[in-house]
Length: 299
Image (cartoon, rainbow, N blue to C red; front, side, top):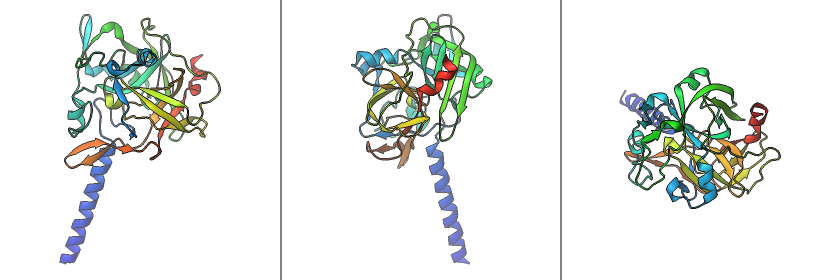
């Protein structure tokens, strides 16, 4: 009888541990149900906008956008306040983790591909309901050290007028095109690849909102596999919230794709969590929908 009781207790303990591990791999973000799993490869290349020295990367960052739930924005006469917990509070981070003091209001990322059209991941905007509840916010970035973007000019905040197209294929492309409620006049439309395909080893930079944080620019990545037709695989330093981020050729500044899937974000470290890290050539890599997939719906 005692042996059976011990066996039952062991089974229950293992089940609890498995449930806890599953929950950590899909830690909820503010304003969304779960995050898609991403990871840090090699050194952590994420930078705030004020830390970026490349003039090209700074220009590209100006044309990227944060997707934020309307419920997280308090609208004022000329500016609006972004309301959110800090990264550390949301995820129970260890003190060793970077950017823990920054707030993380975004649930996905996007980029300006036409005067009034944003490209993002399909799983970020699936329906008219998602369209109605989402704001597209430019300038959600730390442009001066220590100054967090809590107040955003209303001119930088856009609504979704319609979802032009959205698709989510588990092992294929994942993208959406959203038409804004008005043309964007103070940010440049990005150049996107029109034909051909990126090659293995080509250098990349991703710009977006990892775990909903203010804009992060992460260079130093490369294409690891270019075999799938609808997407390619790279060792980009990304997290959930980066979903929808534009992935650029770091030499030309041309958009090559949209970040959509990846490896696990976090690991337990005692009573707190730390980023999952892999060597540059390890783990599964991050999946990037080829930007050419949007062309039939864009023009």
